[in-house]
Image (cartoon, rainbow, N blue to C red; front, side):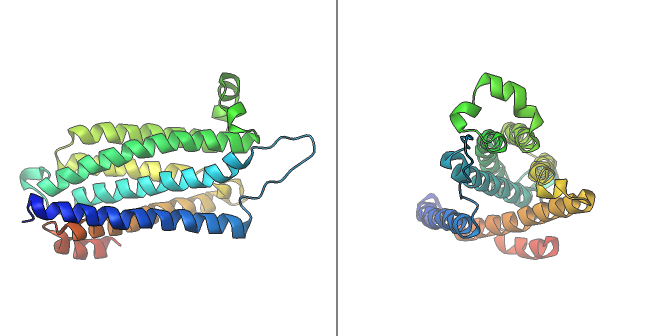
Length: 246
């Protein structure tokens, strides 16, 4: 079993690969925005437009929110399904630690979801963020913009998960939080571009399935790699279970 002395270098190693991974994600997003033209400002005479803060900020914040949701799903999935279990439905030491970590990440996910809702509202209205975040604009338009409304619901779900993880000590409780996290992952997919298509029912279902599959697969890989780096007990036994789920 790893001791406190062996865990410290392991934690430093985790920090060393997590930071580059985050930078690679952001760099990939920036390249995609530039190449795909997603960050281009379309100027129309007499219309102010949202500005670069919104144009560049929305994809970045949304990416961070999605990343937080995937990590939350992965940690809760490891605690409830993949990782070692305690007796009589009680979480093991590893599982309880994962639930606590998931609660922290879910809190970050909630904050990022609120920010995404604000940026989505500014983008939809074509207004700078400073003019969007006013009581009149928020009170009038917030619930009329599907994307902003969906991300606010996600923020509430993520906050509930963060609070619930503080008190969760059973596998069933972790499973309930996992289901709630998957609901939070699916909500933004219901308001994507496919919702405006002619056969939007099929397209929206496809988007939701893809979002759920991505979060389970990527989240599971992240959780297994995390525990593999830490050399936590039961990591190798989780691989066959994850293979079945994937």
